[in-house]
Image 1 (cartoon, rainbow, N blue to C red):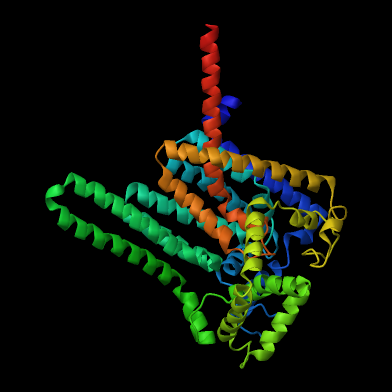
Image 2: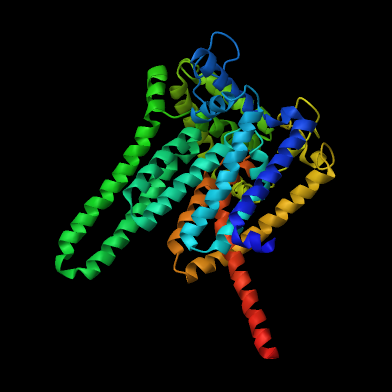
Length: 473
């Protein structure tokens, strides 16, 4: 059996990943069938329903239906695709489990592409397979599963282009990058992030080429410079082309080119409200209510019919508040940053397994955290939380050793690509809403670095054993 696993590790990892997710799926289906839906899930499902029934992208539950400006189109279209099989929740979850397995698969392939080491690739894929937020979010009607899959495909194709220098991989990476943005707008930075790495890669190739061809140094330099910028512009153009139908839809509907206004509303509801609450000693919920009412009254226009203008207005108000209190802002950002990397998944598990009873799709905002330690939970949930904390500790310690591996193997370029991508996502989440699900899309990249660290430990242990064996002989 062990020999078979060693020969086909990826197959067994995928089977194990499916088994865990399917067991959790069965548990929810029996204990609390409503647990597949959380607060945001209903909005996505309603959009899918309205598109299918009325041809209008809207979250409205009643007539007249008003166009939506919060959400982007890809996940509702994914729901429509899933429900074309059967109008129930289960096809959506089944497809998300498949996407979860595909993410494990591409974690293996990306790691193998970077390190050419099957042991590191297997460990990286296994860590994704047993990651609790991944397992949980694969069983919730929300964007994380689709977004994580699209993101890793984008990264995989980009790295493949760098490795093979074949333009088709860069084109496909740009297409998937556009789809990733259409799934969740937080990915807007990726085209510019990739552009920096493309500049570096082409500059490095230019330097290597000109060192070997010193006679035509100036001509080669100009040619490489043109090619470098042409590829970057091509990448950006393809991304823009992919997202352009949605931008055009918003231009026609709301008279402005934009992806979504949810970022501005979240900035007011969480970042600004958290600062306001600390200054005035008020709860987050009360602060949100005060700021929303204040800007709604002050806005000279119709907030529903002018969502873009209203979003700019509340963004300006929120920025004035948070930047006038830099100490509080930095403190909140530091807490959020820690939560991104350290917060385990718990609330979703309790809700899904029915520990809160029926009818709950979120934990009440005013529910005391200390009280939650002793109510609406189970020994199983507490055990899973402790297991997650242990896994996170091991993963981050291994990541430090992973850096040493990448440095030794002269692969710091790829380490920077993965690590900086993780840090970008960590810095773009907002205080007081940061939870384990926001870490889920970048877990494969942390796991690749951590798996390299595990390999370092394995090699060290093997050397010690060999030395002991030699001493005995």
